[in-house]
Amino acid sequence: GLPGGASGARRRVPGHPIARSSTRGFASSTPAAGGWGRMLGISGVEDAMTSVAEASAVTAPFVAAIAEQAAPAAIAASEVADIASSVWSTTAGLMYFIEYFHLAHDMEWWAAIMATTAIMRLFVMPFMVMQQRVAARMHIAKPEIEALNARIKGMGGDQQVMAEAQKEIFAIWKKHNCNPAYMMLPIAVQAPLFISFYFAISEMAKGVPSFASGGPDWPLGPISMHDLTAADPTYIMPVLSSATFLATVELGGAGNPETSGAAQQTMMTKWGLRALSVALIPMTAGFSKGVFVYWITTNMFSLGQTLAFKVPLIKKIVAIPEIPKEATIGAKASVVTKREIEQKFGADPVVHASNPKLKKLKRKRSGEEDRSS
Image (tube, rainbow, N blue to C red):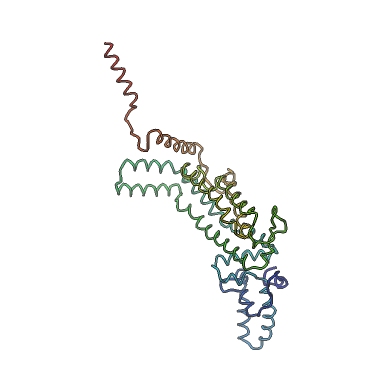
């Protein structure tokens, strides 16, 4: 049943104090920024009852009786109301979202965290699909942009030329519908969610008593998952979190030569993320198990998403353009050739109108002919 409803009134959250005044009960269960009533589209119980009581003294005893019964139920239905009032609205919203699954669907806290994570990732999915589309289109437009850049190099640093070139680049982006600004949109959406999830679960680990018994009953190796407020002394969960993150990086989720910049730049990015995955183990070892339930879930979601975007049928369904193999091979070859040229001839090689070795050979042959004659 819904929290605060009939079945919610019968449920007493383990470890949650009930002995409080009825006024405080209503204040904490229906905070100004939200609460179960606001989230589910139900008007505030206390506000409605107070208005009726002030309007007619005849109904006052009836209102008082209902308020007396509803206040303990409201307290029992929400453990996060008190701590949600002192955090950012996005963090508070996630707290209520997680608690919704815990109460309305009778899920343990760990399952409620996973369910909320899955829904949030599904919400972000359209932005990730858009990012993949833009990345593929940018790769298709890359030869035109490179040709334009090569033409600009030969014209010097004239301001008018640069302005015209900028217009042409914008025209290419518009032609292929691949403005790089769209690549940043998923990050702009995911970053606040990631931070809010961390703070929401961390605060709940401190302020929600039933979090101490909100994990699954089955153990994870030598450790117990039952207490979501404690850190993992065996480092199993930090390692598992970093391993799933690294798997996503290795499979191309953090930069694929077929869908992003030059291969050399992509490899540098990957090495940086590999180092980060190792550094995260000691950096996050002190975090609560509840945080790792979220991180491992979202990393597994990212891993599945990365693998899915490699399947041609799925790419076709979500309208991600297919990159021609010839273009991909040519792009990789051009990077290798440029590197080899720089190693052999330096960063600024001298370009001759004709092969200087042939010139020497012709001069040598003409000299031999002169001597023989």
